[in-house]
Image (tube, rainbow, N blue to C red):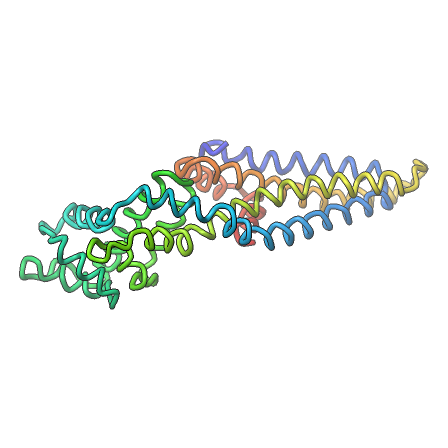
Length: 299
């Protein structure tokens, strides 16, 4: 459903879910519907609070070390410098980059961005671009290299997330740069730095959504079972009670749509960067579903 032209399916599915919940809640009546909506709210709150509290711990204790090894296997002592050098030479500046110079700049770990700007603007003895534009291109180079490294053996979503961090010109690379240069030979430390700072949140997001989905389903089934056994089974309810139940169904439908957004988000980030890109473009066109989806992304 990530195809951009089928964006309307998200809104259509959301509408169907809300309508179904309105009908079900109206049939239950006010009292039973109220119990069920409390169960839904409780399920969302508990599932998100529990998933958020354990996601960082799970990543640190079970996934992080494996990620470090996989990143380490995807780079050697001069991989980052070599790839970054190739990127710079591929720009429309007609420059030949000395890897030894790049390596020394990275190894210094001091004001790396500005050192690179000065170096690039003096390779041919003339300024090739203004500092602001060059800074953006330098960070785009960081992003492209890190995305290759991470995406080689790890999640494409994590690779895209790492690239997005380094693409931001406000990201300071001074601590990271010395860990990926040949002169320091510290690329194992570089792999650790990437795992800790550039992809940790992406994996924690995946873990959080996965745990949330499981916990929500379990908690909602448990609360519904309790409500079913505890609530009065007398079907003699007034028309007003059914109407109020239907109103509650709107809220319950919204909660179900919110949960569906979490599941869809998880499905796409477990896929690849292309499907994630198409999904985002499709959802951005929706009128209603995008609000539930954007809320999931912010939590």
